[in-house]
Image 1 (cartoon, helix red, strand yellow):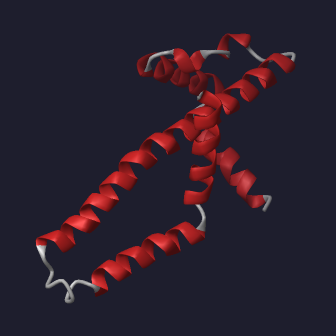
Image 2: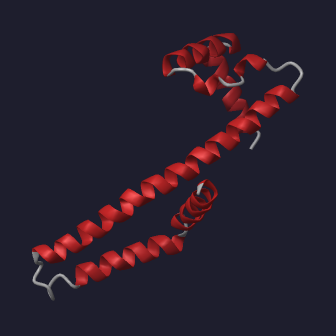
Length: 132
């Protein structure tokens, strides 16, 4: 079941991000809008689009969240491997994604302090942009 859901969520998330999916969704809305006068803008006419979009949104949330969770885990595993592979890297950072938001903010503040003040960061960014 897990493999089936993972494959389904990956395919749906990939498809939903394509221009064709946007065109299809836009076409459905346009057809709905143009049929308004035909159905006299009735409550049922409005209910059709509301129900349809609610169901699609509800299901897409789960499918896209599953795909994002897998992508995030894969990226985290790759980053952990890079940390392990670099000689001078701090292995202490492996697994920090499990810390609380407060703990992560404290680590970020310490790292920023170690790397220099904001002016130094801005100069480094400016040098980077000049290379382009």
